[in-house]
Image (cartoon, rainbow, N blue to C red):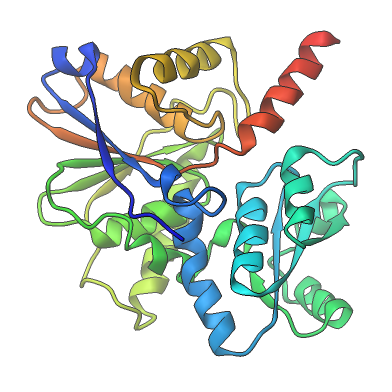
Length: 307
C-alpha cells in the first residue's frame, strides 16, 4: 500500500559551483493520496484512535488543505468515518481538494473565520463532540505530539550534513530535530510571513515531547529558521516562484507544490548562490508532498489573471 521513500540526487550547476552535493527525499511518492509529511503526522493519531476504539476522526483545515485531503483518504483506507471542519463559507462547486475529500466519505462542516480561530479551545471542541458524538480530534495539520512522533521517523540516515524542510505548523521540523544524528543540522523555511514566531512553537513542541515519555533522544539536534522565502505569506506566489517551479520540474523531473516545497527549494538554491552552506556539505531536501494543492492553486491564479 505504502512505498518506502527514496532519495534522488539533483545534478545542479548551482550546487556544483558551491561544491555541495544535493539530494531530495521523495516523500511525495510513498502513496498517491496519503503522502509527504502528512502520512507521518497521521500515523500515530490513527493508531491511538484505533486503540481507543474511536470510529470517527474529526479535523480542521482550509479549503485547499493537504491535511484535509490526506485525512479523508487515510480515514477511508483504515476504516474511519471522517469529519472535516473547514475554515470559511461553503463555495460550490467544490474545489478539487474538497471534492476529493467528499468522494473519500468525509463530511464537511463549515465555520466562519472568527469561530474557526477557536478550534484549539475546549469550548469549541466540546461543542463539536456534542454535535457529532464521540470523535477523535486531530489538530489542524496533525500538529500534536503524535504528529511529532511520526515525523521523528522521516530521517533515518546519518549520510547528510544538513536537512532542509519547509515549515508551516513546525511539527515536521520538531520531529526531524529529534531524529538528527551527531553532526547533522536542520534548516526550516517558514512559508508564512514573519515566520520567526515559529521558533517559540518549535521550542514548545520539543519541550512537551521530551516531557511526554514518548520515544526520544535526550535532546534535539541543532536547527534554525530561514524566514526570507515566504513570497508574501502562506499560499502566496508570484511569477518568479511559478517560473522556478516549472523550470525545476523540467530540469530534474521533480514536481514541487507551490505552497511549501517550491519555496524551500527556491530558498536553498538562492542560499547556495550566496555561499551559505559549507563546501563539501551533503544536503538533503525533504519533499513533503502536497502536490494535490497545485490544481486548486492554478485554478485560483487563472481566476485572478482573468479579472
